[in-house]
Each structure stands twice: as C-alpha cells, then as structure tokens.
Image (tube, rainbow, N blue to C red; front, side, top):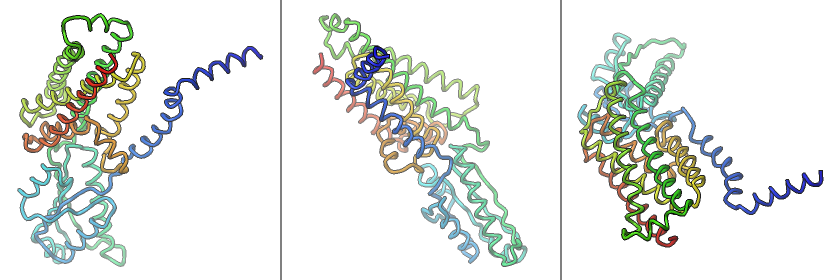
Length: 367
C-alpha cells in the first residue's frame, strides 16, 4: 500500500509540474459551465421590430405599446411603406414588422373583427417561429384584457408572412452555419497539425536549410488545405441546392469570395496555433475543442448572440465564424450584394492580416 501511495504521489507531482494541464483540468469545466449556462437558451428577448401603423386609432396604439412593453420586443421605429420595411430587414435592423391597416379601428368597433399582418425574418426559422408565437400570445392577451368579463369581444386575425424562408425550412439556417464550422475546423486544425508534425518529427529543420525562405515553407503547408476547403465549399453549395433545396439567391462569385476570405482567416489561425504549440496533441486540443465549442455556441450557428451576456457577445466578436455566418446568410439566403457585407469582409480581412503577422513573427522567433 505504501508503494501504491508513492506512485500516486508521483502522478500528482507530474500533474502539478505541468501548469497548462492543471489549468485545463481546473478551468475548462468552469468555462464550459459558464458558456453552456448562458449561451444555451431557446428564449429570445429584445427582438427589434418595426411598425407601419396606417390606422393610428387608440386600439392600434395600445396594441403597439403592449408589444413594445414586453421583454421580448424592442420597437426600433415607425415606417410608412413596404419598401422601408424590406430595407430594414435587409440591413438587419429589425427581425419582425407589424403592419396595421387603415380600417383596423373601424373594423374592430363595427364588426368586432380586424386584420393585421406580421412579417418575420425567417432566415433563421427557429427564431422566426418563436418571435411570431410571442407576438400572437401578446395579441391574444390584448384581446382578453379588452373585456372586464374576460370574454373576447374582438377578434384580431393575424396574417403571418415568413420573409426569405416561407416554408420555415431549418436547412436555410444550418447550411451557412455548417459551412462555417467545416471550414474553420478543416483549415485551422489540419494546418496547425501538419506544421507541428514537422517540428515534432524533426523534419522542419531539414526543410529550413533549403533555398526557399522559411515563410514560404510554412505558407506552402496552407495551400493544399485552401484548395481542399474550396472543394468542400463547392460540394456544400451543390448539395444544399439540389439535395436540400436551399436557394442561392445571391451572386455565386460573391459567395465564393466570402468563403475564400474566411478560409484565409481560418488558415492564419491554424498557423498561429502551430507557432504556440510543440506537439500534435496540443495543436489538436486547441484547434479542436478550443475552436469547435465557441464556433458552435457563440457564432450564431445555433443560439442567438443577442440573447447572451455582454462578455459572451464580446467573445463572439473575435470569432471569425460569427462574421462569416452573418455575411453568408445575407448573400446566400437574402440575396444581398457586397454593399451589405463589406463590413464583415473588412473584419475578416483584418483578422487574417493580424493573425498572419503574429504567426510569422512567432515562427521566426522560435526557429
């Protein structure tokens, strides 16, 4: 038993000497608990919405105030035409619009029935379904509260329109997200592992004595994965179009340009990981677990970023996948042009330049 305790003590000493392992064992569960606890929520709050109120009657005003007063909606403004509402949807300023016709108040008082229209951005069908359900419940409560006897004297009929995704197909949301996840994992993980493998096996020094500059040797490792990533992009687009029947509304060349920009940022991130790791296991751990979980949880792939705490929203801002998924949805699903995604492209380009610069500096210092 004494010998067994000595071996146990030896293993503890090995663990305590490795500070990185200690941080991983102790910090990772807490970090995952915080991320999962705050990021995983199906409740959608503070959804920006707009109103086109042609009636301007007292019931219409009260209904708008009730919707805006709930925790689920924030009124961003009033519009006077369908064109203004469509432009607000395209720019991402609103997720829902309520259109109240001119005869709303008159029909409500004289016939007891009135119509209104609800328009939701269904590029994310889960969000659109939840948002329309919330507003329908609020309208039902408004009808009940209009009678002291708890009867329903008025009937407000809602016409729901799902913009960009009339059938509320989930593939419209998951195809752009899966594209970002696949590109991130393939490019960053495989690039970092391939370079670390050369270091670990001792063949990197042999490559460095060749006439080619060291930076070109490192960049040459990224070229094959860039071409493989482009093949994956084309395959995903073809499968989504002809198998999943997801429309490609935007310019195909703009989609490919956006994918190339994101791929370069992921490759640069892989080069950075390779410059700070010594073993393939460490590179796989960082690029796999360290990037996969944040990309799934904090990029908008599954859960809405707007509903997360401020600290997690700030973390999501440094993830290239967040900007790519936002931009690819705008082009692929909404059919927008470069003017709508230039900011996301500029951010991805800036991330690529920064990561590549840091990777080159650290590589030169280490070798």
